[in-house]
Length: 593
Ligand code: F6R
Image (cartoon, rainbow, N blue to C red; front, side, top):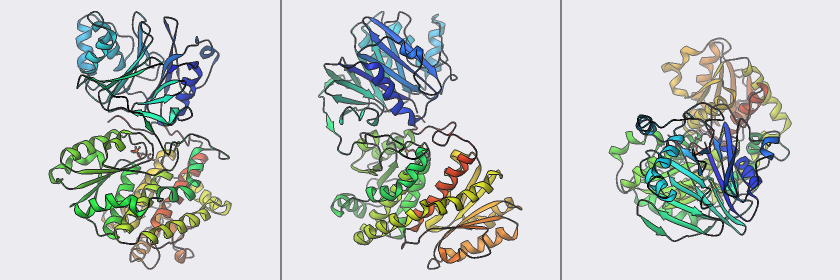
């Protein structure tokens, strides 16, 4: 959701910014723009739709200092006028923002009363006009500080100035990291976008203002009113490549990557996990938080912690944390799950829980993010870039890490490692032509229906929720996941001839399997098209119109049960001609509330 990229150094920046914006594409955007300083003049280029070069972009004068922005429209439609950067009336500076100015209307109305004219409908233009007004009284740097303090919400702004040839940026909430390379300084919403140039990063705190001119970097905290030391951190596991390889879409690549990513996420030694385990053992309750898919992995890991390690573990959707705050106590522990490490809802929940005296651990996929910085214990899924907006490999990686943690608490670390190894081999069977053909048949049936239901229970309840989200996100079909027990309490009213119902069937060793079979019998009787996903033992039953077998590995099969839903979602979306990797209305990184 919105991306910022900037550069100041010895290299020509036009292509660097263009490529940087392309590497930020995955976050989600609907328009984009760049500004380059040449001599004393700022030149801009803006476009709506996909980031691609055009003859007009080629004509943008070349320079060594510039900024770029990908916009995900919030205030004002997708138009070139609303696209950032927004240049000042005199052309002295230009500004881009990531975030939302929550009090923009109040500020705008005041300016309108003073006779200020607006060109765009954006909240960002308000910042430009306020700075312009302040420039009559102070320097650009002081004007930015003065105005930034008036903004409400999570915003990060970046300003390119023609007077002193500098870039100024201030961060609050929305992400901003600095890359320090031999050729100059990079500034971006994530470290992935400049990872081809450097793995040395400066991670900024809220209200840090950075001032760069290609030779020097200065950091100043505008709330504390003090200059800060510049601490550069070497990122150990930095990702660099963003490639689809032989795959047509990132999504399919990322689904198949799971053979390895399950292992990468669980490479932690017992010693690595020990500090968190100690904290969990001495703590009272563990809250597992996340949003969307990460919220479902939080639920799945809470299940593992309760049922494998007998820990008092409670999942909370991060955007619902307020409903739990009255019972959160000092000594409770929070484990936050996130691919991006920048999800505003989850960051806000962490901040509130920290205020309550909770220790915070996080499991994040991207490096150098706000969530890891806020954490007492930082862990990484190490899955490599996940570019498709719909999360796949990071979901299973999060679950696998949680399984390892739970088994370690139960004193079964080695067994967990063995089980995950076995699981990662077994899931390869889902990536064969035979399996794809079977899954495509299910997708073909679904293509003609408007909705579907997924039933799971116990270890598979969260898999049902996640399976439904996955299919919804990219096929735009209405799919709901339920705990199977819910069926007879209401959901069954929706079942009619031809309704698609999936049942996730664990092995007969689990008591849940008979409940699932009975639930599926009830929908079959009412004419449903039934698809079983799970243990081979039930695959030949007449009860099922289709059956996708997943290998049952001890108590970790739930993780492999998620994969057929990812594949159904993928093949269905391809069949429907949808934009698989960039579904409508969604952003990969949800940095605003
Ligand atoms: C679904 C999906 C979203 C994210 C959610 C949280 O496929 O990707 O539901 O899981 O927006 O994002 P992160 O994991 O970055 O905190």
